Every structure is written in structure tokens, then in C-alpha cells.
Length: 364
Image 1 (cartoon, rainbow, N blue to C red):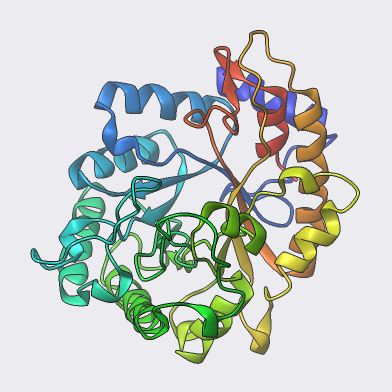
Image 2 (cartoon, one colour; image 1 turned 30 degrees about the vertical axis):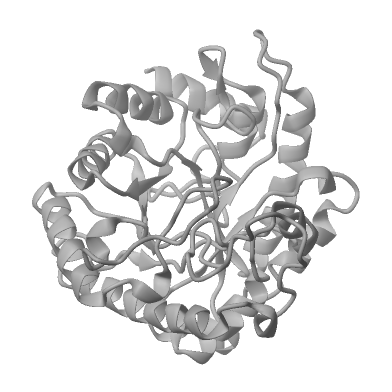
């Protein structure tokens, strides 16, 4: 009952007649969802509480992660499915099960976490682990909507083939030719395409998720100036997608993943920024549409009750741009980051869904 009341309020707020969203939870032009990753770190009772709140809010889709401990991750997937939520499952490639025992991580010099190199990932181990995880998900009767292997593989925080400088100062890459360990980075991308192929194959072997979409790893939109300040290598999403396409990624994915955090651009330049960032998203023979698997606007206020009006306005503006891109076919889905874990971006505040959160997940 609570979920129905909230959903009716959302429909009224946006002047949308019932029936605009179809039975798959899809809005008029695309899928809208919310992130709640890393539930594996929480006991089942807390997982259920969080996911129940998400379901009661009117959200239809949720991005969850398959991470260590894997059993706990799968428990969260089962709970979400039981609550009627459609699941985008992000597979965290940092899982040590995917690497040989003697493979160590690249250092983050205490400024960011130490992480293994994508080029060291063992596709055989990945297949074995993924097959076992999908088998358990299948046995539970869960149907996955989509699977996203990897996260921000164009950024050194999540791809150990990219360097973290001991101290910020040197310029970070503007093109692939500037990457310090270019050969290793390109080997890692080739490994990633193999991971996408394996993911597609193992999904096809399931009974319930054989038609799940495969979305390539959501890429960071961090710009070069910010990377310079952090002393961490990254590459523009468009350049990485171009490299992946040259390696055959289009044969194994249904969409390209991308992250959108406009920051101070959430003003007059917002529309141009988003359209420029997503210009590689395509339809037909030109490529694949995009899934924005993370997007968000920060509100650092911690007091209650929360004044979320300014952020809500920015979110409405972003949703408007997304709507245009969905109508053109360039964009298929957008998942807001985050439900409750990040103090700045979270929308579950002061015991309820904030006004910005309402606008982030409301149907088109």
C-alpha cells in the first residue's frame, strides 16, 4: 500500500497518466533506476530493510553489485527480486577470485585503494566464478534485467593498469599514447572484451536470465584537469569505447556504460556537457546506445529536515536532457547514484526519500 501511495504521488507530480510505464518498469522512453551497490557488506536484515525502502519508494530498477563475499551479494539479489525489483547486476572485477593467487595489486600510495591490474585477470577463473554465481541466481528463480561486467575501467581507481602517481604533479594522459603502461592497458582492454564474451555466453546458458542485456563497464567522466589534481591516470570515455570497438566489443554487448557527474556544470552548460559526453552513444550500424549506470548531483548538507530544492532543480534539468537522448535512441537507461551510502549523493535522507530522490526515479 505504501508503495502504491508513493507511486501515485510521483505520477501526479509529473502529470503522467497511469499506464505510461510498462510492465517491465520502463518509462515512456527508457529505464530509470537507483544504485545500491556493496550490499554484500551488510547482514541480510539490513539488506532487506534497504531494498524494501527502495521498492516502497516507487523505484522499479536497482543496480546491485556482485562482489566479495559473493554469497552475500547473491542474497541481496534474491531479496531484491522477491520485492519485485528489476536488477542491473554490476560485476566487480576487483574480486580476487578472478586472479591467480600470486597476482598482487598495484599500489595506490595510500591515496586510493590498491587494486589488481585488469591485464592480470584470468578469464578461466572469471568464467568458473561467474558460472557458479549465475547458477545460484538461476536456482533461486531470479531473472536479471542486465549485467554490467566491470566499473570505470578508464580510471586508475578501478583499473590497475592505469598509474596512480606517488604525488600529484605530472600531467595525466590526454590520449592513449600518453599512458605510461600503454601495452599493459591495451592488453587489459583485450582481456575485458573476452570477459564481455564470457559474460554473454554464461548468461545464455541460464534458464531465467538468458535474455539479460550485457552493458559494458560504466566509464568515468572525470576530466583531465581533475585527474591532474588527483595524480591518477584516466582516459576519455569516447577514446576507450573506440578502442573497445576496435577489439570487437560490439559483438558481445547491447549497450555502452557511462557515468555522469556534472558537478559545477549543473547550470546553463549542463545540456551541452551531457550531449558531448554521450556523443559516442549510437543506434543501428554506428554502434550501441548508452546506459548511464551512475549519475548524481551532490548535496553536502547533513542537517534535518533536508533542504534539497536546489539539487532537485538540477536533477529535473538532467532528466530533461536524458529524456531527449532517450527519445533519439542514444540513451536507454539511467540509474541514479546513490540511495543512501554516499553522504553527498545519497537521496535517502532524514528517514525518507528526499525531493531530489523523488525526481530522480519518477517515471518519464
